Image (tube, rainbow, N blue to C red; front, side, top):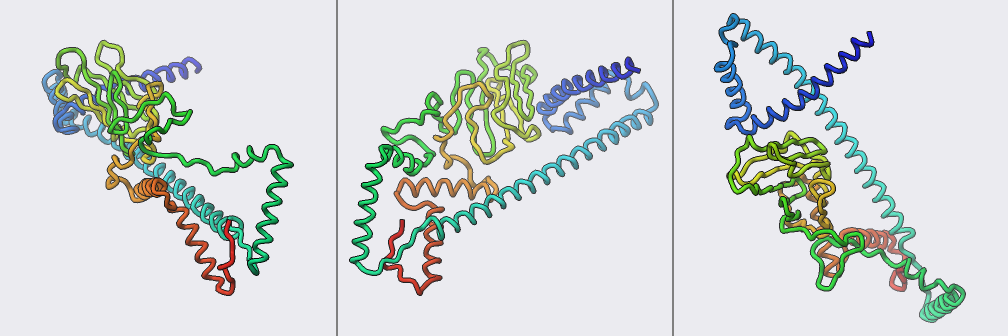
Length: 356
């Protein structure tokens, strides 16, 4: 019994390994056939016609039946897989929607509580004499506190506002953050120009261009490209891989492809799974770019879904507002909340109030 189980496991492992190898072969064939799947089927049945006795070795009805049996067999597997993937994608989208709704609700609640109740301190001052006395008293308390606490300056520094993260090119004389030192400046396509290849990206996808330095044109059959959700391999047959390793993030393998441009350049098109973040490299271990210096304007905002486009436009708007010294969208919302609070309490005199 144990031998039978071991034999079955071995055969299954061999089948899986063989399937992976054949998938890579068939994918390469499909990408090189002029009419896609139709061209691939035409080539396959042409092969059966030229090199085998498929059409005359048995009754023609048996040959047709064999084709139909294989069609039905793999049709069922394909439909089941497609159904499962749709269900998983739907469940993932629902989970993400719930998380976003919870975060938005929590942020709104905290924002309202902090801005109206704790974030804004309102004190009513009865007359100018009392106001002057209050300011004098507060000044004396601060001086006394500074004398008693030698760490006053340090605490003041620690409580200073956090410096916002900038996105875009460095201003003249501005230095990189410590964690970003040594990283490459993005090229005009928000990627990098490296020795062996050049890559660019948008929020949706990446393009990798690998020049062929053999001094001659090559053909598609000389190229081996393997796409996996988290792994990439590019090589010329009989040579060391040009690019190989774990991808920076996940890709949609079914939407990714490659072409050979004029026999002199391999062009990879990789579609991202996460369409809300920038990649710092194509394959882990390769030189990284500073993603804080990418240019969001270079992305095609019209191609993004509504929610993602809204987030990117908000980032761009807030960045411009900061550069102009004006309030960001969040700060504007806080001001509106305060105005509504004041409008809702006309019985209170805010003309002599101090806001901290």
